[in-house]
Length: 53
Image 1 (tube, one colour):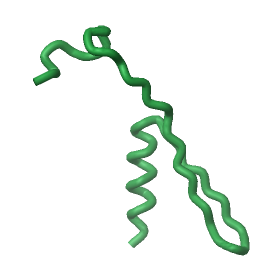
Image 2 (spheres, one colour):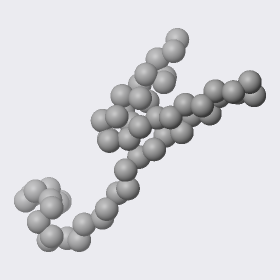
Image 3 (cartoon, rainbow, N blue to C red):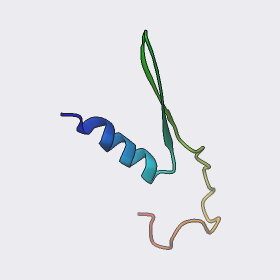
């Protein structure tokens, strides 16, 4: 139905990523690029109070 790529593009965009597409006579390649994730240490102030259970 063609909705798969549109859904992926929306989700990737919501997380700050991009999708690149390269088409040749041999086929099409899609690359999904997402920003690096940085782990924060507990108590660093980056998380809201009460989020932990």
